[in-house]
Image (tube, rainbow, N blue to C red; front, side):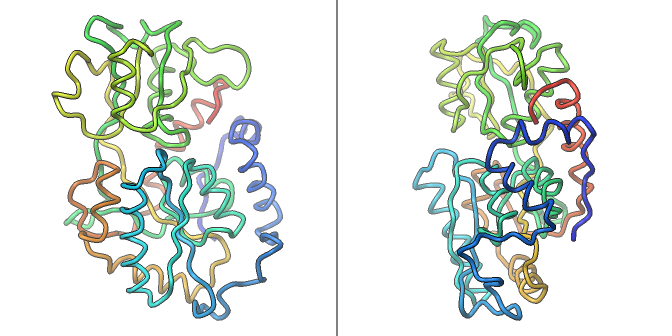
Length: 318
């Protein structure tokens, strides 16, 4: 069992409310010590760590459901299968919460998780990282900054968005949702209240950066969040009212109870993947030059856990 990033008492009370029905099920599984797998599954799909009878199910979030995201994920899955000498089945989801629930329920064996989803998975089911996207120095890679965009004649400060309409990014992600809401909170604005009204009105999340920028430019929202690189031409007429530090890249994590022999083989195969195999999926996260996957400590994501605790202590959803 991986070490856990302990939630605050407030987070424990709010987690079931805030994470939706899928994660409520996952919490119940975790409370039973991971004994409850899906009833239509064998007791263990990989006896003695062998994958000769079943494919490794690899889960990836593709928020827009587009063919580009599917092709990028399939490239990694195919190359991983060759190194692992096992079939790897791609499982696409639109929401990080679905991946976390799938891991906890043993419906997914390996998943690429945003750092926020990793923290939640760790707290829900003790899931820890195997590897993360890395650089040539063996350090975890960072992608682009998250930004909150407004029109050039719009809000001068985040506090000026009070009463306005804001489009966040993909729920359950650090750059698209958690860190921007934490920035709004630091400016005195409540976004995503569990009960009652917030200080800003949340529009439906944007599934792509292009959609987010277009909605601001057309006046459909007062502000919107991007997480990838934004070209000057795309930002014409807009201004970044807030920027985060460069975002930590995604991690790959395995479900609880995966046989240790298969977990070791997975780790070795993942570390052997080349930057060429990783590039299509990494580029979607703003990482342009991945050189491989590297081991990372769980406490690297402590600041994400702290940001979650700050939100929940204020009565906002994680």
